[in-house]
Image 1 (cartoon, one colour):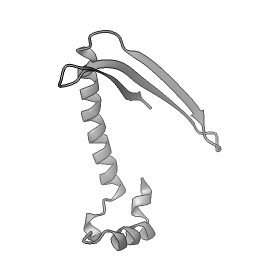
Image 2 (spheres, one colour; image 1 turned 135 degrees about the vertical axis):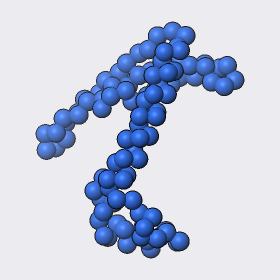
Image 3 (cartoon, rainbow, N blue to C red; image 1 turned 180 degrees about the vertical axis):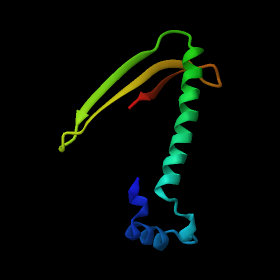
Image 4 (cartoon, rainbow, N blue to C red; image 1 turned 90 degrees about the horizontal axis):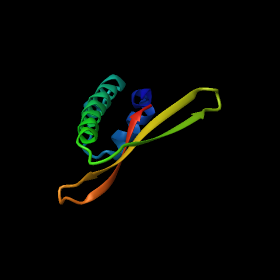
Length: 97
């Protein structure tokens, strides 16, 4: 996320952004804060959906390692939920990273 603080990226954004001002470009700490807030909202929505399910939840996992030996793992929850029309739709949400 530190890339948003790069002067070259900021200059590019200002160049292509039309009426975008320098004050409109978020600092990496503000961007991280906004992403964290949104994650919490989406995670709470996912938990509410899962608690009100008709059936079961399935989980999948994926693991990988970068070229510099940094390891990652994700867990994704899959389930069917009713949409606003009452139709079943498949939902997939990142549960953990």
